[in-house]
Each structure stands twice: as structure tokens, then as C-alpha cells.
Image 1: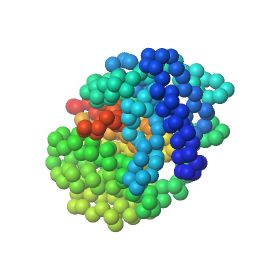
Image 2: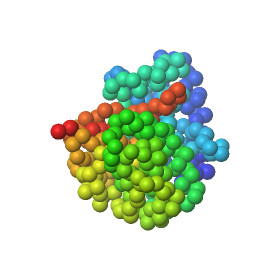
Image 3: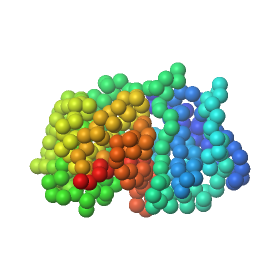
Image 4: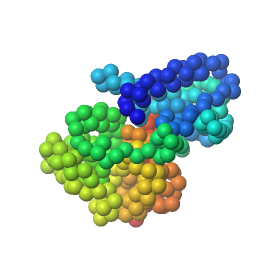
Length: 318
């Protein structure tokens, strides 16, 4: 589906959700999402064992571009989840409506509560309700793609920098095994000059552009697929997983890669999982299966009422 068609569809959805959220608070209501494109925008927010359901809507990015960001805002919450029903018209989520003040309070509390989690239960589907994965040609380097990726991951860069600033010893190795344009791992190398940063990607055009645009003494790039990285993974102190996401790969493939990479983490190393589109594996489940501690499941930008998926895991220390 083209960007223009997606925006047109989502503008219509946004109007419907605005009307739905204008209902009297604490009333039973429902939202039906047809099978196919759009279902992946339904999300769940778990706070203090209270489950809320929402539907991601358009935001305006740089240059006035409307898109579906990885940032979730209070206005996107539908209400307190009660039930999900599958039918011939699609998937219906049932909930109890909430007021804006209640939603705002939830977003203020969520980042400070252990166990808070934001997740998306459905992958991206095509018009035949089959899991959709972008063709590898989509990831061929272009200036437009580089600008989009760079702008859309600003909050991830800021969060990871703040998280790691005081945690890493001099010489710590940071690995991004699917670095795409290289902008993310380059930002880590710049913000954390006492570390050694390594980026790798299966796209030769991406690696060549990364080497051209990002030259730092503590940064290097390799042409290598993520699944070929067990040895580098075993040597790193921080592993960034930014590709286990909807549209990038299938859920089965994402789960397989996650476990393959996590089992090679050395003692005390961290894995940070996020991405522009929803994370596919159930990170809480797979972290437990791999014997890793799940430190957090979501994050927020300081002074912003926004949440985003960002899982931080740590391997046991010797």
C-alpha cells in the first residue's frame, strides 16, 4: 500500500477514533479493525496489572509529513481493555472509556512503574490477511530513506545515550548488527567516546554509505547479516536489536534470531530491543527463556507525554 493510500485510510480512522473517544467516560464501547493493513496499529498498555487498549494514529513529523510514529500518546488510548472478539468483519476490541485526565495520569506513571509494558499483538498484514514483510529492495540506501530513519529514531538515540552514559566502562563494545544507514550506532560512538562501536548490515549499499558519512575513531562498519554475528555478539557489552520488527521480517524469523543472538551474550552484557515498527517477539517470554533479566519494557522522552517500546535486558553477572 502506498504512503498516500495509508495516510488517507488513517485520516479516516483518526476521525472515527476521535468521535469514539468523545463518548461519556466509563462506558462500554468497542472498536473493530478489519483484517489486513491497519490491524498492527492496535496496541496494549499494561500498567500495574491493569490492561488498556489503544489504536495508533497519525502524527506529523518533520516537513509536515504525516506518518505512523513509534511514539504513543494519551489520545491514542481507547480505554480499559475488557475483551477481544474475532469475527468476519475483523478483530473487535471491547473496552471501558476513560477521560483525558485519566489517560494523562497513566502516561505520567507508566515509565516509573516496574512491569509497565507497551506491546502490539498483531503483525503487519497484507490485504489477504497474510503477514507482510517488505522486499529487501526497500532497504537499499537513498537520501530520503536515510532522512526518514534518522528523524524517526531520535527518541531512541536520546534514550539509549542517557541509559548508557554512566553504565559503561572505558573500552566497552557496542554492537548494532543491522545498522542500516549507520546513523544510530554513529550517534552512540559520538555520545560515548570511551566505547568501541561496531555496525554491521546485510545491505552493502547501506554499509558503504555508513562508512562514507560516519567517520569516528571508535567506530567501524562491516558488511554482514545479523544471523552471522554470534561471535561479535559474544564479545559485545551492549547489543542493539533494532530489526526484530513488523514489516522487516516475519514473527517466526524474529523469534529465531532473537534467541540465537541472546544465547551468545556474555555475562553482564545488555540487549536493548526497539524499532520504528512494533517489536514482534514477546520479549518478556523470551527473556525468561534465555535466563536474562528484563529491566524495562517501555520508555518515555523527558517532559513529553509519550511512550515507546524499548526493552532492556541483561545477562546474569558472573
